[in-house]
Figure 1: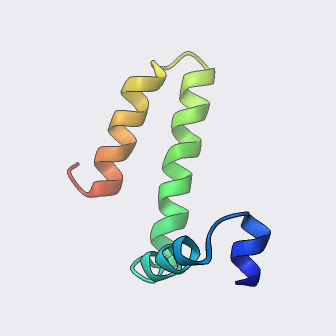
Figure 2: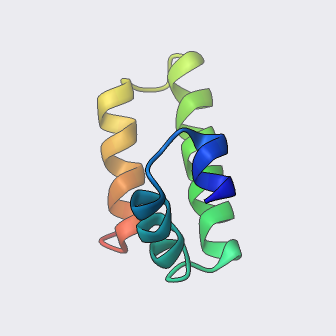
Length: 65
């Protein structure tokens, strides 16, 4: 309830998020964040369009690439 209150969400929703989080390893989440960071950098340096870069990142996160 405390976390839900700090986030400003209903406790039921916070519990669902909490259960979902247990399905991910910290290393996997860090890898996903690194992929997103690299896509952001590539977009800002003109190396690709954001939509295409994000599509590639999503496919990599999902294991399709």
